[in-house]
Image (tube, rainbow over all chains, first blue to last red; front, side, top):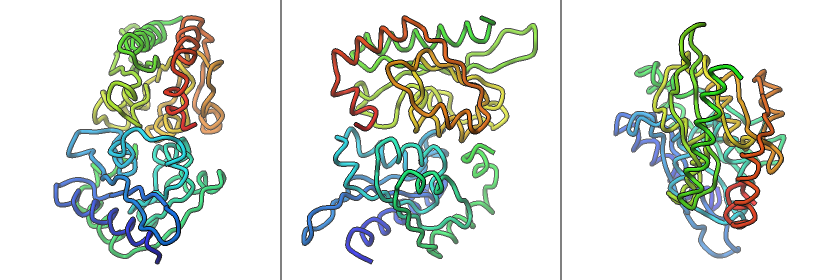
Length: 155
Length: 155
């Protein structure tokens, strides 16, 4: 795993754990900017699902991360990877496509698989890590709070 | 125009004008719940683009409207129409699909056309009003603040 991926996956997982500790849905995300070879990658922002914490219908992990990043110019997004602990839903997929983020690294897609096909169809590089810690955290939450989880995915 | 559409289009346009008056991007939205025949439709929430007002990268008109609506059960969304003064971008399209909102009424799609094809492919009813007031408001804003507009659509 290179420096970009090491930074992003750790930050996203930390956010997911933070959300779980707050009683929230344990999905975290991080936006990392690629920089020139030899320089350290830049963590632009991170975030986690805020449905329960903020009664939010839009702040999924990736959306929260993009919101925390604030207003950015188009060329910044185009040199970034979005890291997320769980496969992005169709809303978050749309946000990734809006800003033409070229690469998405997904912790796991076993508990939920969102818009990966649409990302791929639009030329986005998609990496699925099948990370056990991400999967176990989501599985535990879904078993504990199935209604909140269903609400989060519109079911 | 029936009572649902009259309520929703007026609320969305009012929001777009409010945003313009605040110096913001003039796109408004409203979520209206269909009710039984003979009863008045219910305006669940409305909202407008908040890029400039809140330095927000995610609060497009439709997203702001969904956020203002707060946490709703799935069956509420499925009895709603989303009204928006401008064709929804791919992020807002994704949010509409996530919550399976079955009907979208669009003020105009001449200044920008977003994810309408994806909505249609997923069985969403799409109505485009080609409203002159919506179009004129967007055209004026784009001419006045082209950089803010490009940023809003990731360009």
